[in-house]
Image (cartoon, rainbow, N blue to C red; front, top):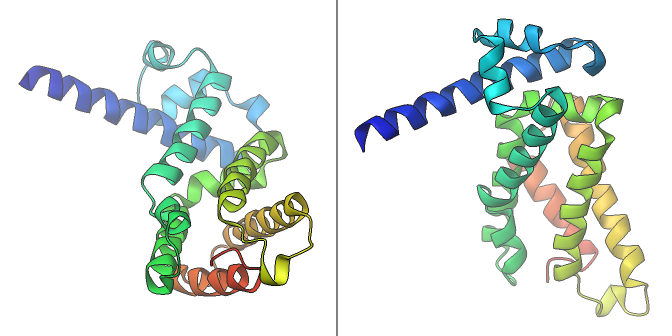
Length: 193
């Protein structure tokens, strides 16, 4: 059992090095110009090791995107915020954890959001936020008589756009500030009832 754990740790460490190398290269040059050799040299592993874990650079990109979006959902308490009703302090803390996740993974998010080749990433992120808002949206009060889908799309696009602005401008406000102000905007649109 100890050997399996060591092996697992080595695999995780190797994959982390490959991912880090890939993201660094991705932020430095165009995706089409990145080669498996570039990735393996930067990660300090041989080419065969990269191919052991990923079919090609497209597979690496797709797995990197999926992994970060999954972690964004699972490791953050953002989904807990969306399930809670009326507890503002917990909701702001949950939203803060989301912004902290973005901050801790700045290299990934800035690379994905600044590269026109990764519009798929933005679309996936938008889909996750849209689904979350759709489940939380209160159609009473200020939203009564409005189109549910229009409000959802508008709010999700505004949120993703705000995150994109924050990351691409090197996070000019703290995660706490972003959480509090985003929460207020959600409240104004009856999304956090």
